[in-house]
Length: 143
Image (tube, rainbow, N blue to C red; front, side, top):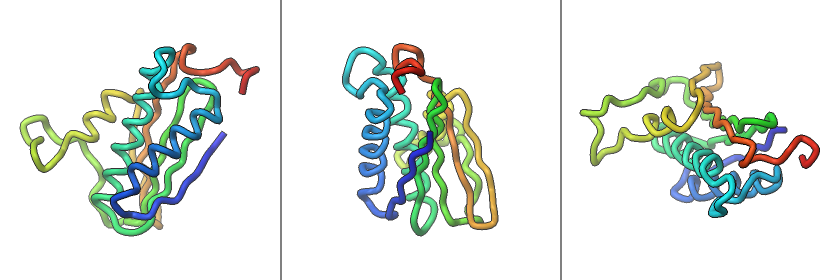
């Protein structure tokens, strides 16, 4: 199942992305953020969503697209931007992180089972896959 949202690149984009992710996970029957059962996986997915959207808004111009793909055991978060000339994202070495930032992809790397970048003519897609344990997700029959 895939759910999509277009985000205007402005200061409200990250909040809008998180709200969209929460609503999507509730529609899928995943444990709501804040509940004890399943909180870790859902919170990880929300934080990864926030970091990927923040990076896209901070480093690229124009509209950003957020896609959430549920396969029954993991949520893949994809953020598309229109800037094919932008530097490819990379984890900033720990000594170079600081007040200016540099923590985002390190967080994504720690919370996701995998992440990466796909370049295409109209821009790029940065994605991350967050595995949700059985306590985080409904059974196949419940979806």
